[in-house]
Image (tube, rainbow, N blue to C red):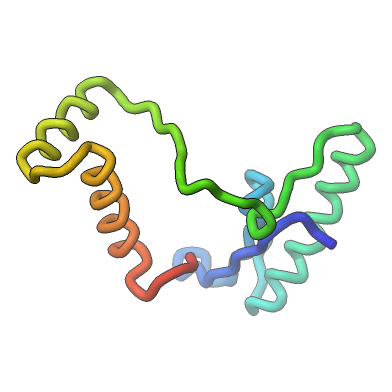
Length: 117
């Protein structure tokens, strides 16, 4: 079983379907249909994993099988941190709450109908 969680979307710019494996940076495939792109991606993933095994490199874990703690560390420029702190104070919330609000708002604009690409 593949350790990857494939994602597929239509690219109007490329005029074709694109399938990607988020766990493997740069691993993608194109197709005339979503199924075709996923079939090509499956071949690309198998080749990638074979090369990793032959070179005794670690195999990436599927995103779907990972347990997340709801926390991540993000390093940002001091000027941005200062701006966020000032804006959070103006809103009467913590910097963490304000950052979560900004991330959620931006994500909703990118994905107005929920999860996916």
